[in-house]
Image (cartoon, rainbow, N blue to C red; front, side):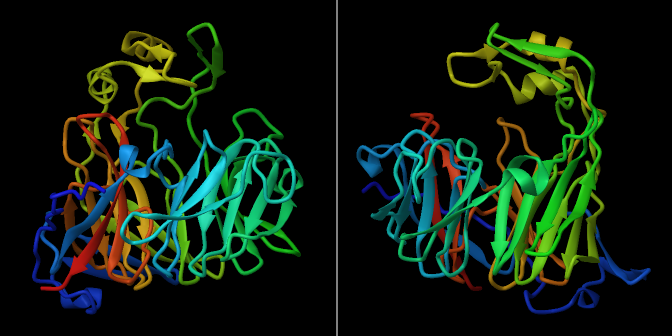
Length: 386
């Protein structure tokens, strides 16, 4: 197996991980109707620890396995040292150990119990239980820590049209979707229990009325403008962590109540058609590599939002730290800000987005694209104390 020589350098800082926000002069905390507002300055500074690459794997390293798309919906880790990848093409879930070696293959193609038809989003719980959103069966397909099927849950009656991430904690489901009862239906994050379905977050997205005809094959209307903010969220330690605006703002919910709002004074960049060209220098792929829509058509039929959003994705680890992936372009290194559990900005990591998993308290899983082969790879890195 090829081991990457790369070490992700985390910029070092003087702020300690365990101290509260009041210990740092550049952090201001105030209360607003029972919500803690944590204001951090916008100057990037280094972390008190670094991330050193343990192993990088993917492509030829995995033999005949095609890892395919690697993002929050196809990659996850438990706390037992395993990282799981759901394959869209193979319709199975592969477990890898901390050396990048595949140790188990879960599920297969089909419509029966524990089988998959059309892969949606996967979530791996800390104890190793897995749930896969199956768009073909319109069910949540569950597996135990040993990979054995644990039954399917119908999804259609719950919240309407589903997409994006899924999470669960005990018998509570967290689902991202839309209730298709009106035009311009907002995106919503739902909390689903045996007794009720609660819309925890509602995001209204300004959508143009134009239609994008991609390769005379995909006809899409009401697409959000390029650079429109996305509803990004994750769960952990009884909290739901959400970003849903262009501003640098992270909302933390507990017991279905907003308890903390974390901000950084980061200057937003005005968006433009030139920025669309920077984002998609070779056009945008829709539906498959054989359909590439030109930048000129995207500019004409979709257009750009007013500003480039500050945040791309978010994650949280076993220690409660919050990892916020900044919005970056393909021609610049990715950056991720790290906050303490109470919202104190600790520092910025260069060269990676928000982690996709934490197989141990000292390990972080991220994804990258091999510049030589254009193949996605996973990287496991270790948090190295100062």
